[in-house]
Amino acid sequence: LGVSGALVGLLFSSLTTGTLMFIFYRMSLRPQRASSLAEPAQPSSLNPATADAATAAVKEFEPPRTASETVSRPAFLRLLFRLLDEHDVRYCVLHTYEGLPDELPSDLDLAVHAGDMAKLPVVFRALTDQGYQPVQSVNYAVNGYCIDFAWFEGPAFKCVSVDLTYEYRHRGLNLASGEDLVARRQRRGLLWIPDPATEFAYLLAKKTLKGSVPARQERRLTRLVQELGQPEAERIAAR
Image 1 (cartoon, one colour):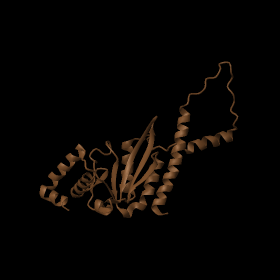
Image 2: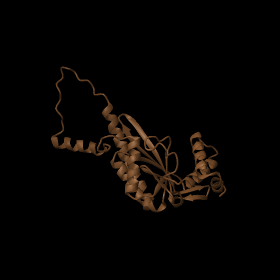
Image 3: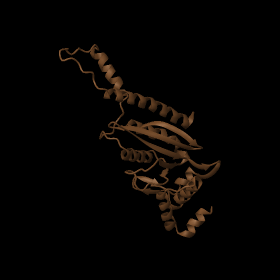
Image 4: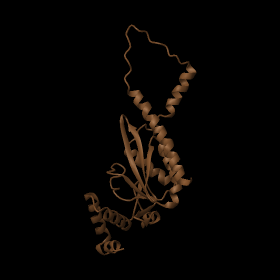
């Protein structure tokens, strides 16, 4: 089955665990039925060995937690970036990285070197071990996957979508490989970002094909033109 099969297996296992986790969580919120004041408490019908086994079975499906017992979007992103580095995954955040890891206004778009694809199941397993469950994977394009990670913060259900691109294609046209997108990446704090020329070419192509540019990314394109200089920006746009 290869790497894709490994990803599917991991996601199926995590989805099953996440579903059971949710069921047990909802059961724990149900109010206990009030008993009569005159009615004495009934002893448990389970012997100690059976009770211990039942408790262990429930705990098996409880979401793991970090050492500080906190999970959050910034914590998820910090952990993800650290794990990618620890496993030598060549990646970069393609755009809208200025506020990371504290602010993520949309999906997290990552370019990944195709040669490092086989390392990702280990990264995802480590995220799962810390309470971040991969609950859905969509193969939306050739070498393009969107994976949703979910967790609970108290009673609130949280989710982050991670978009993984190994090759940027549009209608059969290969616009950029994962190798090209990460070839000249630059370090920015906890994460890697593309060099200005690569970021400009990617954003310009993506937004041109979509036919719309959000104000935030329009401002970013303007800053990139200023950084690159108009002659270089025009040369990139003409390719």
